[in-house]
Image: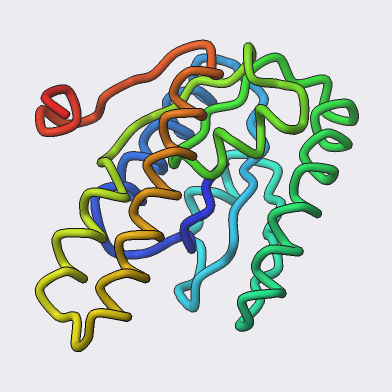
Amino acid sequence: MTALPFPHFGGISSYLLEEVKYLRRKGHRIALVYPPSSMPLGRDFRDEGINLFPLKSSETDVGRIAEKIIRVFLLKKLMQQEKATTIHAHDFLSALISVLAGYGKKTILHNHGVLSKDKLETAWNSYSSVRMAARILLIYLTEVLLETLAFNLVRGIMCINEDVKQD
C-alpha cells in the first residue's frame, strides 16, 4: 500500500515494483493499493497476476481528508476479502491507515525517508512571511506526531536507506 501516486519516476516506485515481483515469485498473493499516477502501469503488473486496487485522488483539502477516512474502511474490507495476513506500507500515512483499520500488528512499514523532515527543509527556505513560516512549522509538527505514532504502532519498520536509520 502506498499513498504516493504509482508508478512514478524515483526510488520508491522502483523499490515497490521489485518488492512486489519478488514476493510474487515466492508464491505470495499480492494486492496493490495505490493512487494511480498519469504514467501507465507496465506489463510487469498485469502479467504477474497482481490484484490492483487503484484509489481515487481529490484535488481539494477537504476531499483529501475524506479520502483518508474512506481508505480506512476500504482497507478493512479488502483485508477481509483477500484474507491478507500482512500489509507492506510504503509511507507513514499508509501505515497509519492500516493501524486505524485495525491491522497495525500486521503492518510492516518500509521507510524510504522521513517525510516531515524533507518538507521542512525545502519549505523553510522559501517562506515569504511569518504567517507562512508558522503554517509550515504547524504542518511539520503535525507530521512528526503522525509519523511517530505510525512508527510505534506497526509490527516492524524496514529502513530503506542509511539517512533514515540515522534519523
